[in-house]
Amino acid sequence: SLAAPVASPPAAQPALAPPAQTAPIAEIAPAAVPRQGQGRPDPYDAGLKVRREVLGDAHVDRALAQADEFSGDFQEFLTRYAWGEIWDRPGLDRRSRSCVTLTALVAGGHTDELAPHLRAALRNGLTPAEIREVLLQAAVYCGVPAANGAFRVAQQVIREETTPPE
Image 1 (cartoon, rainbow, N blue to C red):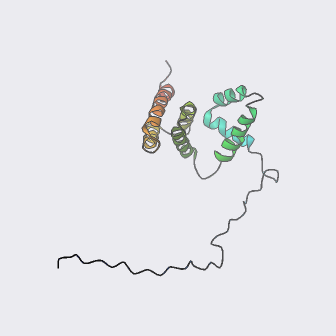
Image 2: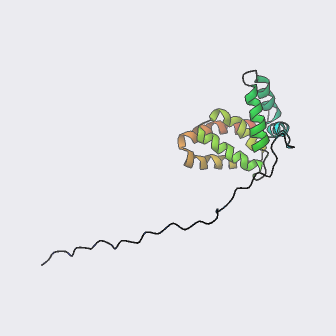
Image 3: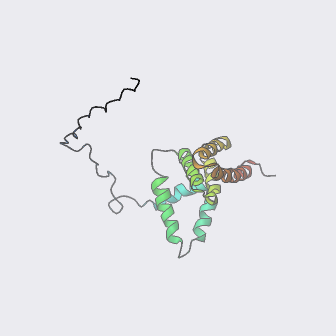
């Protein structure tokens, strides 16, 4: 007979019992830094200093001057949290933080926020060539249309910032 041999089903594997856990794998330690109000300084002043160093006095003065009763809390939040808590942390230098920020702005399609952060990236030591590489890398992971808009903004900002005044 030419009938193909019938394969028998694989033997059932014994189920593995989950390992007995006698102790937690890890414990999360409490934060070593005291909370605000317990000796920790308010990050607003540090945030304002960092914000001015990164974005420039003119940009910060303009943003704060435009704040009113409605938007004042938001400007205070930005200064305290984004600039005093995040940008002022150890672990990443300002060049690296600028790279991350540019990429996040491209990913979110936030071209309206790109120009001041491109100027900040230049102020933080990135070269136009490095900014181009950040945007090319972002194109791969964030999408070509998002990067296309970012390149248009960057081209204009870099031209403005690197062309000597006449």
